Length: 399
Image 1 (tube, rainbow, N blue to C red):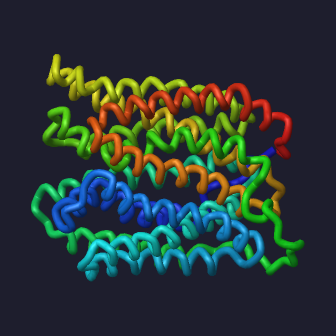
Image 2 (cartoon, one colour):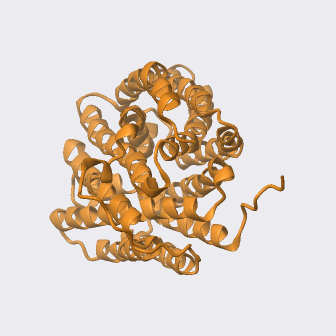
């Protein structure tokens, strides 16, 4: 049987749109803690609150966006959310107070929560079902490439003394180009459907709750890493090149996604997630230990720091397409949007907790303690998946 074509103009355009959106997002992520400190003199727990309100807003809207995507045409909702997400970068340039900044972050989170669910669902719609894991893997690779370039460019611009307004403008320009690509995507026409009375399973994939809890546990240390690792690097004595951490992590994700997506399409979802989970557990404990390695062997410590970033990327890159497919395979086709929103809601909920927890622990002690806590949470996640989530998926999967 001839293999169905994966690479189409529409698929390439939505990958480009996704990359440019996430580039704007990741460009600012490691810079915002410095922005809050230098402009608004915010630190510790308050910084965590100011940053996490974005994620809290995103996870609040995700279940509703999933319901809307399963009920109405998907592309118009995708474009509207993309447009709002893009415009908020202009708003940041006008924010003169912390309260206004937080309000804009909330709106930004709502737009992000909607655009990511709708974009992910559109990818599922326009790609062959037999190659869904591979398609989601390459789609996610766009995120990882943006994660590689974005933080590195953002930190370089910040270290070079470029103003925050210019950084916001740069992010706005990236999303504007992505918005043009998104408009050119030809999505299948989906007529509005008549829904049964409102119930909980219209907003949350009930069969996906165990997997959602498991994913949440993993995303807490990921949130602490993506936001605070540049500060952690400075704490332990890596004064330059912290942007390289994101590059190494993204390279690991890119390499692993190329292979893990194909394994997922062969039905090895549970095995792929467990293997990635084992590696992630080791990496967070290793990241915590970098403080002592740098004290004893500064030169070797830097290599260990970047090696952990590479392995952490391989671990998460292995699990991402597998988790995404796991949620989709638990849902009927009429609930693709709900399945995707449940997957991303779980992830964002953990990211939000990670931002708060990382800031709180960092204020009380040091960030290496936060990563030690993250390693413990990763172990709990793996054990829970092996005992509960994997068997539950095998009993309830629809495809």
